[in-house]
Amino acid sequence: MFINAPTSFKEPPPTWSHDLTVELAVEEQRGHPVGCIDNAIYRLDLEVLRNSVEKLKPDRIVIYGGLGQYRFIKEYLVTFPSAKVMGFPDGILDLPIEEGAIPPDDPDDLPHPAWNFIPVEDYFRNSPLPYTVETMAVERRAVFKSQWGDREQSPRYVADTLRYLKLHHNFDFVFFEDDFSKNKDRTYKLIEELEGQDMIGLFGWGCRADIKEIDRNLLKVFREARCAFVDFGEIDAIDTRDEATMERTQAAINSSKAAEIFPVIRPTIGHPETERDDLVALLKFLKGN
Image (cartoon, rainbow, N blue to C red; front, side, top):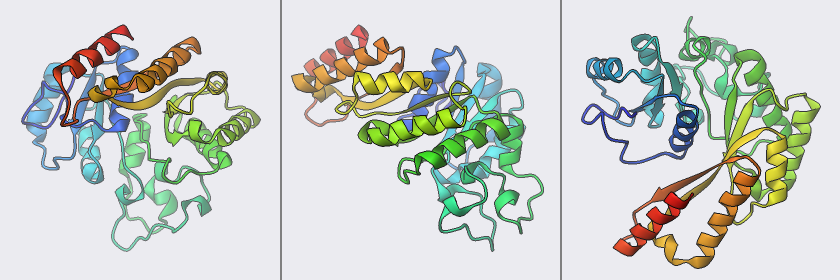
């Protein structure tokens, strides 16, 4: 179930962000009807949107689209009180920074972990906002995430962040932008940190993974740490011509299933040399999995 920009409410978004694809896959698997709001178009008609939400009645609303979404999340929370609103900010520039407040150069120096999940007044002491978007979202148990992969925090910092999200916000699932399969030592250290803080089993989590780097041993470690799914990225229709690529992809899917971890593959069709046979091969591959 999709809700796009006001021009079309029946079709999926024309462009799929990595975060959105994963979240929709997980939520649909759990049996939750999911609505999608493309916030890249900032001037949404809330009345039209409200009518569509009332008609389609999604359990959850996923907001995506980058920088402007904080301008609307509060309105969404108020407008759609029965649906769980899930937002995907893209990092520090998306924080609702009021004029005169300057974010720290190094977020890791803050007194709390998970700096991008903390209500504004907790880290901007001069904040004039008595009731922030974040505090509203937390009370509704809405899910916010940030792109951690570009920053690659230490395993200790990631574990502290997860502990904060669980103990303070009662999150039950967290997705990592990090591709742990490219740095296996970091993965093992993260698991050690989670075990040391008694965090194994308190929440579910997922992450990105590189098909070329994934192996059975790593998947076993993921599973023991309660990893629920791995996102192997995109596969283009034209990739079906490369036998080695398809074999690696199939092997990664099989290994994930054997480890009882849900694999996510995002099919794409965009190469200018794509032919009909490529599309047929891609559809057969997807149908077979």
